[in-house]
Image (cartoon, rainbow, N blue to C red; front, side):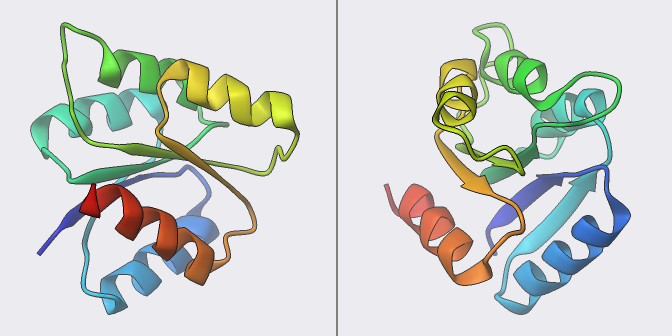
Length: 121
């Protein structure tokens, strides 16, 4: 079973997305802030990370940089999740080290396509 780390501070978003991903057969572990996301990316060894960008403690951009840094070296692909839908927001997420980008509200079929594409590569 493939493991997804969901880093999301909003309880409603977290609950809805984790339940839907579990129904699709994924093992889902949850972090509620950026620092916990960094810690769990290393301790849980997920196959993929879904990273909210607007997080407490450290934001998703910084959490992504830390996860992808040479000292941590996580190879898990990261999909940025954000309500910010401008081109510069997408570029900022990709520049921080995210492998893909998706906007909120999440459309599960679209997100699943991105997850499957990254896990198959």
